[in-house]
Length: 336
Image 1: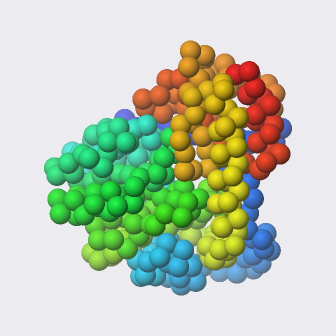
Image 2: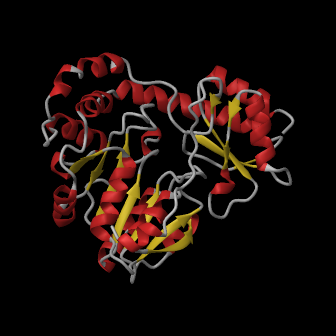
């Protein structure tokens, strides 16, 4: 990390509230967790009195099965954002240019700047057509946050090949990929995949995730990873959750069904962006997004003001939750 760049950096706004009186639609986390998770967490207390096994064999096997890669490619991290920071730390030097999509997750540009790099912003839906030559790295968010659309798998693989040929690191944020049946880029040469347990498994406070990379790149990540990068509860709960295929399948079905239902109901009041993710981006037109967010909050519902994302000035983002909760959101948003 570049000390001079740190001094000029700022924090990035995020969704998510800790007010128990608010129905949370500003953060895109699963409202449900896999069966047995609480018990695994509780059983982690006594083992937590010793240091964890820094090799994390059970977690790495589960993560590899989940992402369809070799366990040797898995690098445990304290959440997906830690995986992103690790990728930029080994791949970006001061003065390097990095292709960054917009509108998209604001932490990409921040993390690039913390390393002394320069974000080269590209519209997210034009990124795969960009020339990676001359850039130290490129970032893809798949599905993209906050728009929700996923990249065509063949086009994404072709872009990964062009990045590899150009000597450009491809950083693929797959935080929401588990909500789809699309393949991961994990295990592809020249790619660092960042995954998280935050979204799909509804555990943002656990701080568990992983990076996946092969060859010299994977070795660099493994060397740079801090020791004991996962606490024992995170490692054990993570390994448990990553094996819950029935839960994942049920979640995908519920989110797809509810997302379609919500989109149909909201189109009369808002422009609804097509989505493959557990959220919808809504264009509010001439109305003030801040007023819509404030009005919803007064009625006990938290929305995300999406104008904090680069390139958006008339949008809010809403998560897809359970049917009853989604009904409440639709009631609050009725009439705009």
